Amino acid sequence: MSRIKAILFDLDGTLLDTLDDLATSMNIVLARLGLPVHPREHYRYFVGDGMEVLARRVLPEALRTPEMIRRCSEGMRDEYQGRWAVASRPYDGIGDLLPALSSRGLVLNILSNKPDGFTRLMVDHFLAAVTWRQVRGARPGVAQKPDPAGALAIAGELGLRPDQFLYLGDTNTDMMTATAAGMFPVGALWGFRTREELAQSGAKTLLSHPLDLLDAIDQGLGEN
Image 1: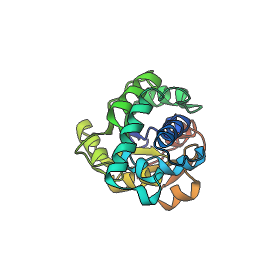
Image 2: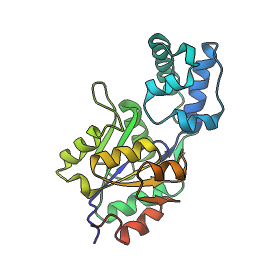
Image 3: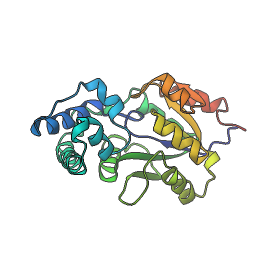
């Protein structure tokens, strides 16, 4: 029997394919500011570390001032408010994966660098078929991933040890968070980043499809 008792999921690029809506929203903001826009695929590397970091990454280097980052990030929040569900969808297999994990008695949780309001809104809209014990996005005054504070806080709230968690994510930020928190890091190859990035950032297992997680857990993934 696996020692894993809980799963901590990243959201964007792991449970939900949100790239189109993120890219379109930010490109609209950039165009309004009279700035160059970016190809969709570039956003695979722009997103993942919070709204302010996204704003800094998309701006021309000479314009990465606190004022421009603020204007860009605020514009993104406003634009994304009306666009978060236009093209975003759960990845193929997520709708079957989550109930199957719940039926195995695993406790399901989400930790995202997306602002907390958007995180909860999207979980309620797209992922409400299962019970989530903890859902947390970025909050003022709380360190974001890869700082392990959020992951450790979730473990503490549940009364579980960090090593009883499997952490599934799609970026180096996620793998570093899992490692720093003492959780079992698993890389989602269907997400935004590459196999090489995930492996180099500490992933102990790489999965090609969401439903592969069921077989891996049933075979004892994460056992001592």
